[in-house]
Image (cartoon, rainbow, N blue to C red; front, side):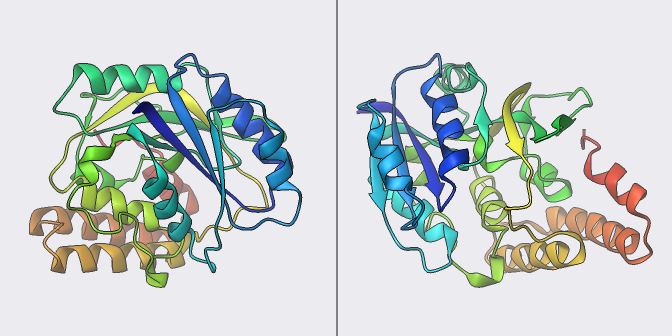
Length: 271
């Protein structure tokens, strides 16, 4: 068994993908396999990946029919590692990202998932760090994620064994489109412990080629997810009340045009 299985999903992003793969292959922790799941790209992605001489790379072409989680779950099904990491095909890892996360999981058997701080960047340079306020504790709870999700998909490392008994693992419901990871973190953290590394170890790329729901549509999807998970007993009544308080506060800020208030809420560390 290899140490870590790193899963990269891609579709027609050959130029960005090359930079992402290079950042992963430059990790100081060398014990990993790199699983690239390609949604049948037409831009030469397959040739690019197969031209890499590193034997740790495994390439798969798989059609997801517009549901990203299909290929994420496919990649996880192919994983042979003790740990699972995910990296979007346009994000970058700093060299010690994997090493520092693996060390946490090895020395903290009670922890099942580790995330790290990130910084936004685009063609103009680096911008906002996800979490700027000093946290009181490195441990991360479901309640915190319900108030403000600071777990970026490209920043996680979790034990593969922790997936036992979790269906999916990532939902393929179209109702959760663009928020599938949020739904998974909530289910995962309903009975498992998480650790957050405050150091910036991931560069999160923002660009026009990324489709994300924002504003009120994003809030509506989030509420659908939390409502469903509450019915399934993954979210307690106490945590649901916390979520609703945040939800209506942000909804009002968006509805009334108080974007500065909304921004302050979203980027204030909930500790």
